[in-house]
Image 1 (cartoon, rainbow, N blue to C red):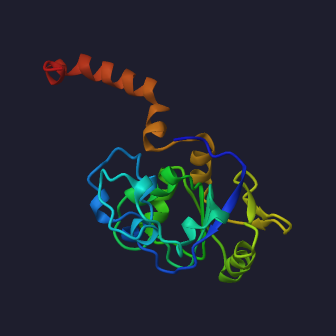
Image 2 (image 1 turned 90 degrees about the horizontal axis):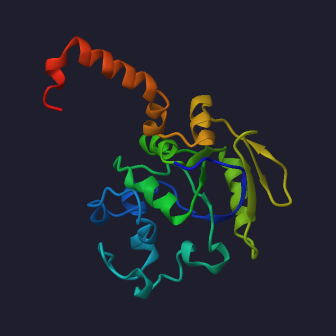
Length: 214
C-alpha cells in the first residue's frame, strides 16, 4: 500500500446519496481478486451506455455524457465528493479497489457505510466525514464552471479548498498512522517478521513433528 502523502487534487462531485457498492463496481466484475484493473469499470452502469462485462475493451464503449465522471472538468480527479451513506450495500472489498485503481485517494461525504469505511482505510483510501452543511458548501464550489481543487493534509487533518479556508476532519490515530506509513494488514504483520521467525524456529525445536512435512 502506498504511503498517503499531502497532495492537491481535483474534486469530482457525485451528487447522489446511498451510493451502494454494486453501483461502485457491479457484481459481474467480482470474479477477479487481483486488486487491480477495476478502475475502467468504476461506476460502470452509470458511466457507460451499454452493459459492461469482464474482458471488454472499455476504450470503445459509448460513454454516458450526463454522468459526472465523464465531464472533462473532472478528468484526473483524485477526490470524490458524495452524499450520505456512501458505500452501502454488500461488503465487497472490490469497491475501494475500483476507486483506488481509478485514481481516487479521498472520499468526502456526510456519512459512510461501516464496512466500506473500514475497507477504505485498509486499501489506502481516506474517507472523510464532514457535516452536511460543509459538504453542501463543497458541492457549490465543485459545481462551478472551473473544477475545484482541494489541498489534503492528513498529517494536520485538514482539507483546504482553493480560495477557501481550511476545514478540519477527524480520523482514528491508528488508521492515520497506517495510511501515513503505507501499512495494510500484511504490512503491519511484516513489521514483526523477526519475532515471527524466532517463534517458528523455537516452535520447530519444541515440536519437530509439526514441521516434518514442510
